[in-house]
Amino acid sequence: MARDDINKKTEMIKPSIFKFETDIIWYIAFQVFLLHAIGIYGLLTFNYWQNLMTTIWIIAMHIISNIGVSGGAHRLWSHKSYKAKLPLRILLLICFSAGVQNTICSWVKNHRMHHKYSDTNADPHNSQRSFFYGHAGWVFMKEHPEFIKKSKQLDLSDILSDPVVIFGERYFLLLQLFFGFILPTAVPVYLWNETWNRAIVSQIFIRYMITLNAVWSINSIAHVWGTKPYDKCVI
Image (tube, rainbow, N blue to C red; front, side, top):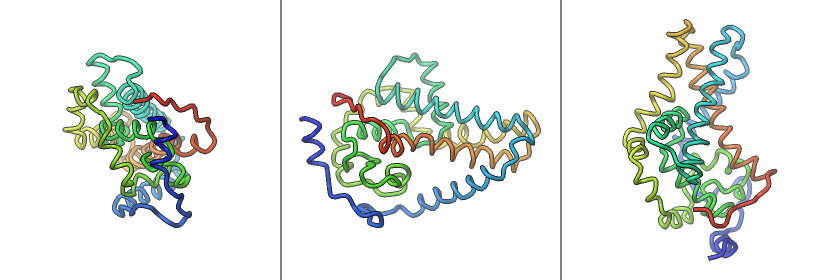
């Protein structure tokens, strides 16, 4: 079926700025709000010169997290752009866990749906529903019925046959808690005598908030001002 036909079947009337097609999941919305309230305050008031190692560590963990998301969940597992042996896949799982962005299977499913049904209601972060929805709103709102329907037809057998992905699915809470929050916070404290308060603010709030918004911007900013060379044959 041609992509234009798919779009016609999944397209719906765009809502107004204050009207939502799906319900808000309030406990997730509160978490996102709290993260950004503390994160923005921390970003503006944090003394980055007090200990340059801590500032460098913010940048380092941001890069590590993005390697896991871009090089792992995106290029390797979503698009199969290259082949990776077991040690590299394990390393990418660790890096992805540091980014704390749900499971690999969930990420891959969302991204493949995004390419297959881009800018329609079967797209998990459909930018046509508003800039904010495409950026962050989709994270704390219930999935659209079209997305739920179409995603059931999506083939994920390739990643479900990867033992590294399955391990990440089974232990994703422990992996993301440890590599995303505990280890990044403990490193500054124990390696260069940073205070717990500054370590927590810099990693759990500032770094994590920046990493999330960097990834989200691809779904929002890049769809408003970017070009749209979509591949009709993508998985």
